[in-house]
Length: 298
Image (cartoon, rainbow, N blue to C red; front, side, top):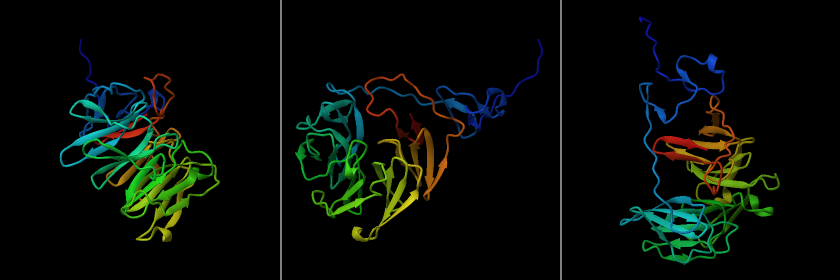
């Protein structure tokens, strides 16, 4: 039976779940399952995800970051049993960390520095290339950390309560057990100081519903702190990532792109909905991460 051909695509408009399906443009889709947009506007099958397995004990695995040395590239993670290292398909337990609730890690001077959560009974410390854990009780506890201009900066994160839930602490240069820097970020506004990243050679500080920049040249005591957004922060830990010259963050079910301190909402056509199904146990029910050049949001 003869008929007229119908052109499908290219769907350069992406997914539009905000509008009524009958009102979609010819280059938009209601949904796309296991597909992604190619450079020419066509849709191709996305690369597969696969399960790398989990440690032999403990629950609630959280990936902290990569620890890279001349001889090893290890993925460092933590669960209810302690801290683990993943390399060549094998999880290895880091002895001496069973009492540590790890919240973050940074690498400096060929050592992996572990930042313990405010809820942790055990202290933070270092992991060396032999996976030996050395306790450093002087390392401040917190939820997130970065190394900036040879100093370790730590923010409280969501688990800290009380008057110090907005306190930014910074170490001496190349000395991560001495902390002469203590700066309250708009103390008393009812918002916890959740996360920290280095952006444009400054520190970007994310509270629950606001964002600040802290800038200095050589002396942190002369730092300038300025609020760059009074309504947008981050929902929790693991809700901000850097990609090239931009930052992407999740705040109140919206994804924002940050370029030169300007915030632009990018998921207007794809509003998030509540999903009550989950493999358990989740450490955090929301997150933003990168897979190659893809942004993944829950």
